[in-house]
Length: 157
Length: 156
Image (tube, rainbow over all chains, first blue to last red; front, side):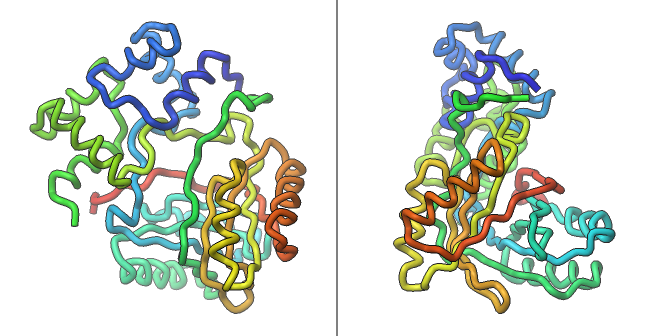
């Protein structure tokens, strides 16, 4: 998927510190030297392509009052689809990746309380029949940031 | 504790901004606020850190960042905080957490790095290891993204 130069600059500008002014798209347009309508059109297109997942706010889950943990399961290759469909069915499980380790399914879980977390993990164990699960809650958070220097992207396809 | 209004604003903002000329006005109407009141509230949430980032969430894999490695480190507990801060200071590190160890799992520091290739991630991890003086680490590459979504708060 090719991302052309103006789109890259646009993405770079709007990935954080989106302007909180009455006409934010006009503000962004000013910085890029394009019109407000052009900015809206480009963002809509980038959303359609799936490059932008969402334009909005990312909240600090702890300050919102939620708690979370990272978990990992050992899942047999042939069983991955079945287990993934169980795990992914929980809205609080926002990320789930296969990774190259014998604990191969890694997911993050957010919930309003420790009690909810326990209940969901118990359910997952019951439904999947898997009991060997790593539960790795954070003790210290040193950094959470997903800002990329998009000008360094060379092969955007 | 969040107020009911703050929860309503969170519910709206997590849906994303509408792509209209005056997105805050459109949202403010839904919330029975003025545009100014909503913008002030959003600024307040940004300042307090309740909003961690305000802007576009992207699918990085579509942008050419194809290799995402979770690098896990086995760091002596008494060094974990200092080492965590050191790693967090590196531009290539997007996430850095200390987590509790478990039996069969000795690693207590977790970093996420993104690169364009696995080799790039491996080289970077070696540089990081050198910098912090920790030889016990492992890279876990994501081979398949099974789910990536934004959390929806206060919806049940």
